[in-house]
Image (cartoon, rainbow, N blue to C red; front, side, top):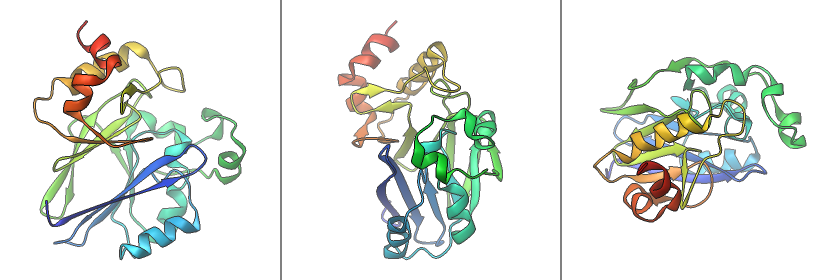
Length: 215
């Protein structure tokens, strides 16, 4: 994975993790969950040599993960990618909460690629694999690049995502968590908020997983 560059920055009042992945061999780059557009994001991309993006990958439609996407695309290009069942959330602010800074920054976001389960995106000589992981929203997806697993708001370190927001369903979330925990390989997990973790750690120590997945 030496030819894969991975960086992160925290954006917005909800402290959303935004991730940058660069395939050094091809020069392709992907930005995951640009939840808020600020000059700090411009500096972050410039510091990592990014002038153009190939993908803007959204794990789900909640505004704290998507608000910066139309602004980023206008400046850096890149195809906006999201699970097809979450595309409706990008069209109207009413599907988000009433946090003032996000409301002021909201702009309609037009996705270029709508994902379904097991879709793959070309990323240089490697692929970005997509896992369909609804429950926090109707169409949340996770992105897997080599050993990096970007899990959005499905799993956090020692916690799991909420199911009481727009598009959420606790029973669907439980099925998703069981699906993820059935994976035998270990992965680095990069959640939408908070600390990075690993799949093996969460299987062993996350009390929410032990209580849900073993049922």
